[in-house]
Image (cartoon, rainbow, N blue to C red):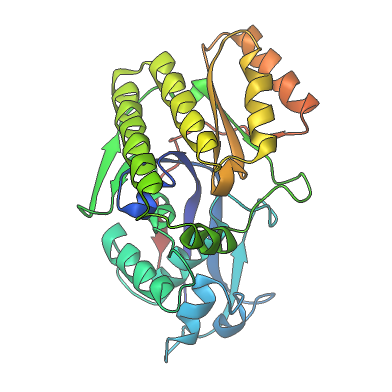
Length: 305
């Protein structure tokens, strides 16, 4: 069998909690890419390739006829979480089982159906999957089952820093979703109010991208961060990092990403090279790892049969 496919990493820019309640989310692709290929040696059978507890592992367990041969999944992040390794496994595994190339809606629907079965608390939105199939910058609206592709030149003015090299900082998404459900999300009054406010920041973020207004995007980052912090959905480390970056010249806004905003940090800045150097220096002081990738430039799912 001949097969090779890849998809980009992803990051939530705005709306990672709104999308859990059917609201919109703004996401972007970035490097590095995840890869799945059928190899002649040095691989695993398809049944052995993924953790049985992962979405891809559950997909494999529910599939009678699996692809033959030896397989290799490549994660250039080397297990550092938060940028879509688990959802990439699902996207690539699903594609390996079907020909021709799948669209985002079919993969997203199958992901949501699978992960909703036996879910404790709130099931994942599947927005990650959509972003990695589509690539670029997208606004995903699950209630309307729609994706809006956004062309923008703001990518170089958004710096991304991984926090996952810091031991104990990353929050396991499935555990967090279970706890969130216990607190009444998304039906409690506080949750509905939060989702409404976060949805507004997504709308503001889309407008900022389309108008190439980095200051407006930075403001949307700050607004969303304030709402999440007030709701107890921003970890203390991210709050401290945001405060540290805000004192750097040229910084227009900062926001965490992922569960409790613990996976990564986004910094919007004015594009001045001297200020970029200052931001990178501050990140090193904070123990953050810069991801030198331009947001939104990575293409979506690509495959060769």
